[in-house]
Structures are given as structure tokens and as C-alpha cells.
Image (tube, rainbow, N blue to C red; front, side, top):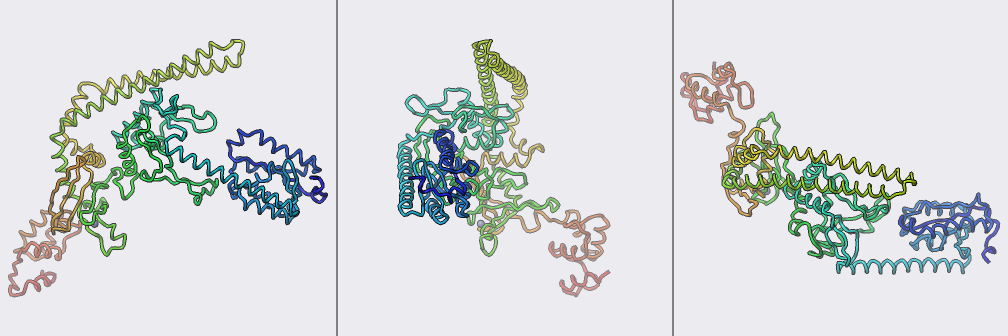
Amino acid sequence: MATAKIQSTHQERIAFVYVRQSTPIQVIENRESTERQYHLRERAIELGWPSSRVEVIDEDQGRTGSTAVHRTGFHRLATEVSLGKVGIVFMLEASRLARNNSDWYRLIEICGVSGTLIADESAVYNPREPNDRLLLGVKGTISEAELFTLRTRLYEGRWNKARKGLLRFPLAVGYVRGPDGAWILDPDTQVRERLACVFDGYRRQGVVRAVVRGLKEQGLELPIRVTAAEGYGSLVWKAPTLSAVIRILHNPAYAGAYVYGRSEYSTERRSPKTGKASAHVRSLEQWPVKITAHHPAYIGWEEYVKNQERLRENWSHDENRGAPREGRALLQGIVYCGVCGRKMSVQDRAARENRSPSYLCGRGYHDGDEKICQSMTSRPVDAAVVEAFLGAVSPLSLGVATRVLDQVEQDLITRRRQRELQLEQARYEARWAERQYNGVDPENRLVAGELERRWNEKLERVAELERAYAQAERDAEWSLTQEERTAIAELSQDLPAIWSAETTTDRERKQLLRMAIESVQLDGVREAGQIEIQIHWRSGTVTEHRVKRPAPGESSLKTPEEAVVRIHEMARRSSYEEIAEHLNRAGLRSAFGRCFTSQHVGYICRRDGVAKRKPRCASKSEESLDSSTSTES
Ligand SMILES: [Zn+2]
């Protein structure tokens, strides 16, 4: 029956064997099916194709079959078939060729046009015959329907389970499943404490980079659960990275929450490389399944939420505070406009201009407003905020001192504990390797050799950790001397001194400010000549301050005091030109650093109301007096 359909015109052309499995996991787990697919090659030879003309297309191994776009093998197949080079296409089950009906029908169509046969393990079909064509079509439809129901059932089932908090997925490192399936904290003390160490570091430093640096300095690694197929679920220790720490901080599991659907996969957005649907991260409020207090937590839910905000803020974006940067404007990142509520930016001046930076509300202008909302020089504002800050903090300085000291000691204790645990673990591993080595038959030299090598490695690791431990102990001793303690206590008591110390950078000052101040609001519009400052303290209180807005030119560009005094002195007896010459000879320069001219001098005289005595032209008006200065000698 099958052979009747095969004619010599078919046999003269190539036979294609199309091998495909859905996912890489299936490729590994479903070897049998793969083998069956390769057996089709033998079937082709049985049916009369010489082995030289049988070609196996397995380029699509490990690619999912929902569309053909990213399956190069399927494309090649379709192309070759349409060129009329192919006599027959073999596949395991006809419908497995394509899981998408349009691909499948297209292939039937092309095969029909080019007179190519389609065959599976049981039968050969000729797409030109109406019966066969119908059969092939039905097979495709059934396959797609099956897939659809299967998928819906799986999908719905998954969500149902997730809503009850019962859906199982790989647990975050630091958790294991208890006998009843409930999440429990990892019994491994080292894992638990290392995670606590990360959360604690972020709590204190507030910057992921600093946490990573801290871990690296102490030579502490992070526990990671292997998600690759090989060694799946096992625990490994790896050097801390920025992304690993961020992942830990982002993971709501550590706050005791069972969350499903943090990422949204839409089929419209696919990776151009792999063809997989790309993920879009949903915000916390949009998580479809969120069960708090589902299992024991490492941090509180409030802290988790706060951490998310902080992570977002430090992702220095205009809308957020951003980490403090260098630059003289101390309120950079925490200053808001009191008029429109928008965030104000800092306009830094070039260093040679020797002017202080300004706070500027220019967002509206960018968005199409006529002009900028308001701007003001930072100097008086910063001075007022700093004064308020130092005033607010000094009564608490004793408390700060104690807290700093406590923190230092606490740090030392945790670090020591971490090192001890690390050492303990290494010793345990060495003992274990030793037992394995002792347990093996000495005759089995290959195995014994390998075990001996591993044992040696473990011993080396122990020795290395012991050295590091001893060194750390020495370091710790050094940093805990009585003098050090006193010094810290004294320093903390004298915050104003730290503040103004030359060794303190602007960046550190900003950090200090941010420890106490959440944001600052400025309004330089409501009252002319005044800037109203609202400080929102982290404690929740708001204080109001007011500073005088410096007159134009007053704060930054100023004629040197000495020159002004001399002008005042000489104004009554000399011409503007004479005064200018005198000033220039004395080496004095204008506010812009240029030589004085009679115009300069005239401007200052008029500004300060210093009358110039005019012995020869006393009757002339003030104006003509000025304009005639250049002709006088
Ligand atoms: Zn504004």
C-alpha cells in the first residue's frame, strides 16, 4: 500500500528526515523518541532511497515548535521542497512537524505542488490525493487542538495552584522544603547568616555596590542554587556580584511572601535571537499572586518594600534621589520646587567662574512652559540647611557615638562568625573527603588517586581559611584598641568638626545630610527677595527656614573691597579715568578680572551714590557729567 504511492520520480529525488524535539530538556529526557526519529532514516533506505540521498534535518533539535520563525531546519525543508528537490519527507508523527497549523498546511500545500510525499512510521501520504490530504489536515488539526487543551489545562492549573500558594517552583537559596512541602529556612547556618549579612549590609550602607565591596573585602562568598540541568538544585558558593545581591534584595521570598507572576510574558514581544517571549517585570502592586507571611522571613515586609524604593532611587534617575555625587550643591537629588512640586536640578558652574551652583526648576520649561519656574543660588540655601542639620544633630551626638561604636563591634562579631562558619564548613568537607578516601579500596588506584587529590584540595582550602582567619583576628585586635574607641567617640561627639574638616568630601557631607533629611523644598517666588526653605526630616518632622535671596552680583561677582574703598576715597578729587588708572597701577582688577576703565568706575560711583566733584563744569547735569567723563583729562 505504502510502496504503491512511491514512484521512481520520488526516489530520484532526496528523502528528508525531519527530527525535532521541543525543548532541550526533552532532547535529554526523551532519548527514545529521538532514536525513533533517527530510525526513520533506515526506513527511507528500506523504501528504496539510496543512503547517499537521505538527509537528516536536525537543526531544530531543542527548539520549541509553536512557530517556525526561529526554526532554520523547517525553513530549509520548506525551501528545498518548494524547489522540487525532495521526493519524500519523513517524520515521527506527521503532525509533529509543526505545532502551528498554518505552518503545517503550508507544508502540505508546497508538498502537493511539488509532488513530494509525506511519511511517518506507519504510512506514506501523497498530498495530491484528496483522501490523504484530508487525513493530513485532520492530523494537524487534532495535534493543534490537543496542544491547545493541554496548554490551557496546564496554564489554568498552574494559576489555580499558585493562587493557593501551592504551586511549586525552585526555591530561593536560603529556603528548603520541609517534609510537608512547606518552605522552611535552610538548616545550613552559613547560608542563613550570609543572607542576613547581605540584608544587614544593605540596611546600613544603602548601596548595593558597597555591600558587594564589603563582602569581597572579607572574602565572603554568596550561596547560589544551581538552576542549570546539571547539578540542579545543589548549593554552590560564588564570589558576590552586583546582580546577585540585587536579585536577593528584589526577591520577595525573603520577606516571607509567596509571589507568583512577577514577570509578564507577552507573545508580542519576543527576543529576536531566540524567538522566546520576553519578560516584562510587573510592579509590586500588580503582582497577581501575593501571599504575605507564607513562610518564615529573613526581613520584614516593610523593609522589603523600603528596599525596593531605595534600589529604585539609587538607580540614579531624574525622578529619584540618586546616590550622592561629587559637586558642591549639597542638596543635589533631594531638592524640590516649592512652587510646582517638581524636582529641582543642579546647575553647576565651571570651576573658573568661581560661582556657586544654582538650584533650578526647569522641568516645566523642558515640557513646553514659557520659562523656567524658578532658580536660586545654592550658597545661602545650603548654609541654612547645614546650620539646621548641625543644630538638630548635635544634642544627639552622644547617641550617635554609642551607635557607631556598637555598630563597629557588631560588625566585627558578624565577620568573625562568618569566618568561623566558613572554616567549619571547609574542615567538614576535608573530613568528609578523608573518609571517602579511607573508604575506597586501595587497589582501585584511579578512584583512590582522584579522592586523594580532592582531599588535598580541601586541606589546602582549610589552611588558606585558617591563615585568613588569623590575619582577620589580628586586624580586628588592631581596630579595637582603646584609643580607637575613644577617637570614634570623640569624633562622633563633634559632628560640626567632622563636617567642616578638610578631609571630609562633599560627597560624604551629602551622605551625612541624607541620613537626617528626606527632602528639601524651596520657594523663592512667594516673597520677593526671600527664599523659603522647608526641610522634611527623616524623623517625619518638617521645619521651615527663611533666607535672604542675595541681590544680583552680591554673592558671586563682586568688585574687590579694596578697589571700592579707593574709588570712594578718590571720587571727590579725581576723574573716573584717573581713578581707573590708579587702580590698575595698584594691581587691582574688576570682578571679572579685567583692568578698570572709566566706565567701571563711573558705574560704581553711581551705584554707591558717591558724588563726583566737578570744579570746572559744576552746572552740568549728572547725566552729561557721566557721558563727558571720557573726554576729561
Ligand atoms: Zn517649579
